[in-house]
Amino acid sequence: MKETIQNIKKVYQYGKEYKKNLIGMIMAVFSSTIIGIIVPVFTAKQIVYFTSSLWQQLIYISLAIFAVQAYISFAAMFFTRRNSQYFTRNTMKNLQIKLGNEILKICQKDMDNNSSGMFVQRIINDTEKMASFIGWGGLEYLRHILANIGALFATLIINRQVFLYYLIVSIILTILYNEKTKKKGKKDIEFRNKTEEVSGLTSELVRGERDIKMLNAKNSFMTKLGKNVEEQNQKRFDMAKVNMFYTYIIDTLRAVFELGLVLLLIYLVKNNTISIALAIALFNYKSGIMTVIMEQISGFLDLAKDFNISCDRVFSILEDETFKKEHFGNKHLEKVNGNFEFQNVSFGYNEENLVLDDISFKVNSGEMIGFVGKSGAGKTTIFNLLCKMYDVKSGKILIENEDINELDEDSIRGNITIISQNPYIFNLSIRDNLKLVKENLTEDEMIKACKIACLDEFIETLPNKYDTIVGESGVVLSGGQKQRLAIARAFVQKTKIILFDEATSSLDNETQSEIQKAISNLKDEYTILIIAHRLSTIINCDRIMVVENGRIIDKGSYNDLLKRESL
Image (cartoon, rainbow, N blue to C red; front, side, top):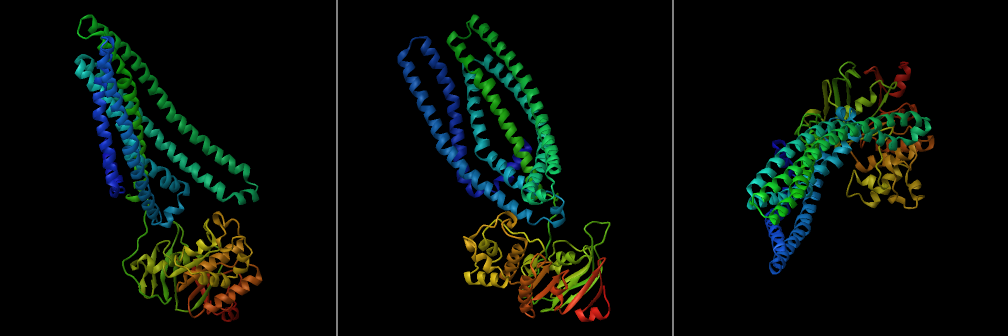
């Protein structure tokens, strides 16, 4: 219970601006609870009047019960549900936005080591469970529990011995329900972890369906997916087994307790302690106290368990050090001209192997620099480190003579654009893909960028032109069209440093030649770095750096390198 209260306080911080709605819900719950205590007493009187043929009193008490129950229904529908829907929906929205922001702060290494399915589950499913518990879900269970507790206290008014019996039975059953929830909770954690794996694989199935087909890997992929789904179902069954075992024990005990209640009531009637009418009324409370209230407590405990598990999973991202976050400095560069330098930089994606080994070079504003070398030599890693996607192991990276670790995020990523060999195109329209990097993008700017990227003629052939949805990962575009859209996106962003990582590899020679001219036209105005295997892409660069085994082994113009017979 302590953990649940702490988590409620945390989640409430994301919904406290809607506290008026929460207060409205709580007031409705407590008013219906007070009424829930009165109604059982009225019901007992109803039975007494009925068995005593007091018809007028029976009609009055029945009308009173009707009015009270009508109010409960109104309070539940209007106050509780209306307020809870508003509170739950907005609290979930705030949690999801905050969680999305925090996921974008996670360092790239931790993102690389975890499946996207895990993060999707936490953003969508876990935040919903958290908001639901503190809103409608938890309060609805609480309302029913408190209302049926009213029946328990009604028995105290009628007969203390029956009240004591009901109280002892309730305590025993609550302990068993609580034990069931604990055991189920352990199994549920295992089930959710496996569900995340299945979700990740399913995402891969959808995103990679083309490659799965082309590689003729359907059988092997589906075998792997099937194995994971089978393991997931086993975890679900393990959880169900715990539930079935405790349900059998509880149901058996409840039957024993009901028999004990009958014997107790017979004893009290025979000893003239209570009348037959009151015995019937007390017996009628058994479903509310020993069945409904216990089921509601069980449901509440299950919901609280789900809530706490979801809180652990979400707050491990929001608060914990489970996932390392990116760290930036506080210094902001008002103006970036495009000068940067690597000073004795070493880096590896793991502790064992260095990808870059004591690498140093300087690039001046307006220069166009080419990088060549074999695959895996460390060229792309240079770009990743310049964008601070990873932290260097040793050495320094300077932008405008300032250590990159001291600069804020906007000074780095707001001034660098990277265009990769396989750019990610969002499942949006062409227009919205471009607006992601500049919200106030004008029509003229958009068309100009697409013309520079040699994409405008293709767009004009589409039925919806710039409003065409390109599908997940730009599935409706060819590889070359995706690269051209990414290049247009870079031209829209207009950062002082532009990095081309094999960005024209999927283009035909004619289109590449046109884009090469466009890139050349940017020379002097922007600092441009190009990774390429096609020499034609970098032949006009001011300098070419030859990278091998994480080191720059030679540098110079194209003609200088040829004269030296450089690698």
